[in-house]
Image 1 (cartoon, rainbow, N blue to C red):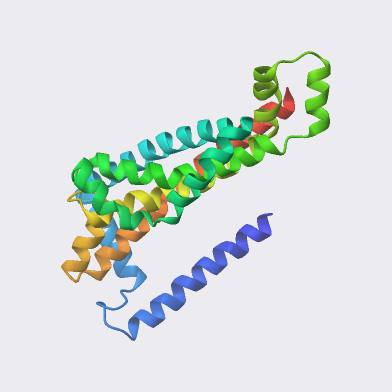
Image 2: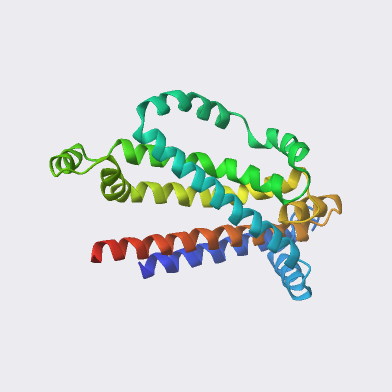
Length: 248
């Protein structure tokens, strides 16, 4: 495991080295060197220039992820448990996911304004489907022998759901949550592309307008860091949860 980690860091250093070499042969407008990007990033963080944008985007990600995941999980449980509702809603859910959220963004901005609400709605809709799909799958494919055992023991539908189906399907549900967490970053930033004066997405558009490529790269690094941190936090919570579950 340690050897794999060392190789990963070596690959990272190699990528930076190749990037630095290529950047020396190009204009900074096309490809800024990593040293220039890091300098821009540190200056922006030290001056507080990035702070309001980081806070705005982070709030949109967290709120959108929470609402989208909550709605996705509840809908997934309902569709997994009730076949009639699953057959009734599933075509509409698929149809809603077939429409690119970027195409709907101007409509959401028209309905909810240029503030945070429209970005939260876009983020929530993007987060909804992975958790809904994984929850439906987890509920549907619970071990039938275990379900029969619960019935023999006299467990009702709710007891079977909360004490067997959801705990047994937790790995699949949490996997969907991890995917949703990554997509939440995409949703918030894309929403800020369309309409917004604050947030990392809006800052990327502003840097494009100013032809400030180092600023654009530094903001992309911030977006990557935020997405990675959220993913790692969820992963650590998942590991602790399974460790507690196995221990008990």
